Image 1: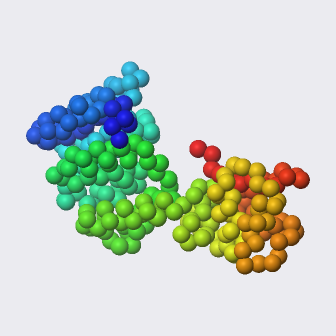
Image 2 (image 1 turned 90 degrees about the vertical axis):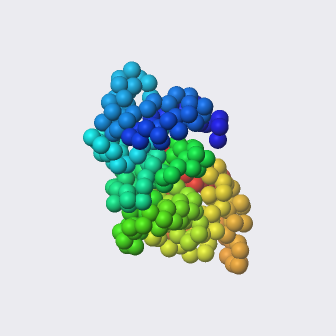
Image 3 (image 1 turned 90 degrees about the horizontal axis):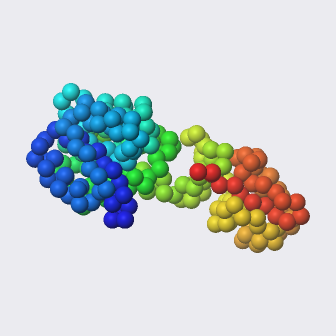
Length: 265
């Protein structure tokens, strides 16, 4: 963790002087540079002044409830200028009403006051590394609405569960995702069921991404509990997978084999 954090430029926005002083002491020893703001309005001005000088801020740690401009409104303004900045919200139990709006902005890193320093540093590292995709955000938002989340403890439980679910997903090409746990394809919230040989073949491809696999290798992968191991059967399974997903998902090198195309990042 230390090797990542020491290269970060952090903007810390907090209106409580005592909290500022305590965390700045830690941040100065941890990050490359720490910039302090007393409220959201000042935080936005400092962010923009650094942006004009091409001095990028990597992480913004901000309280939610502040005078002049609250944390959520500040995040909205920052995102107009830079969508790559990561955010960590420090929040109190009375801030639950803001959580859904924050998630819709792509912010899923929170820590509850009083702040545990080690947990905060872990949250910062995760926020900096994490890729938040739309499917994940929509899933969290939908569950918050379904369960009428009002208690912050329930929110954190839900967020952790959503992250675990997301870890089961493998991004493929053309907007498709494969869920290992449920053995299904997903696209734009739609679930696409697969039969046994399609699952075996797709999972073997996923284990060997962007690699040309020979006909013999692929035939061996789908022979479990079946005696139909002909090349025609392999082609039938691949044709069915393409029909359920996209022709671009699996490419063919004539006379050699097939290759699965994973999502390009």
